[in-house]
Length: 296
Image (cartoon, rainbow, N blue to C red):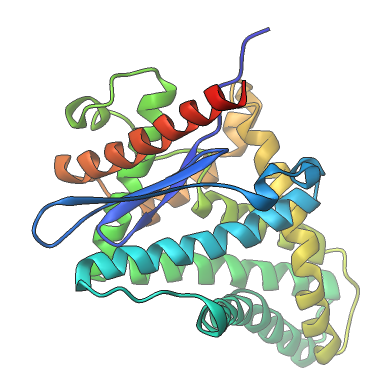
């Protein structure tokens, strides 16, 4: 049986990239003076328990952790640019984290549900159609959101580092030598991408909510909030399954919309950005290998 390659991933940060493995995480970011600054750490605690092997539950925990870890490294990368040493922890972390989650829930779940519910009441259309329209509104908001923020100059650079992250992982998975010139030849698209997961989440919400019957507007909004963990857990399992079966032509066809949406959240990076991304990956990969050796 062919040995499956470890599923490494990461995210773009401010002027840098964070790379994550099973046992370690590393971030590389370019400081204003041109130096590449590296932060790294081993993953401990819940990462070493069997709870992450339980279907559905592992998805909720992984998503919650990815949001928290991502915010922390975004703060570290911002500190590199400003020269400050602010830490996002304690009450400040939970306030920022909660505010971000609230923003996402309102924009991508409650507003589409409210608009579709009002349209249903006004036009007396069936609940099936209003739920379908709700999903279409949610999808349109996602596309417009990515398109609008992608016009901002600072976000364009973050999206370019996002492209650098994907190129680096694609090159590694192709067993290519990780140099900026070689890595630049690879795609900015990758099936294990946060943008792709969000689209999967949106499409799964369309499928699930389309089976809901007519509800008063308040209960419609409440059910959307209550169903978020369920949909997120299911979307994670589907996302994980498709990523593990990329050799199947049907799976490759199914994920084409996911890859297409990444054109809005990635940009072609320069060689200097790829240098940063490769530095982050190599640091994480060295820690992963060292941890494996110590566990033997």
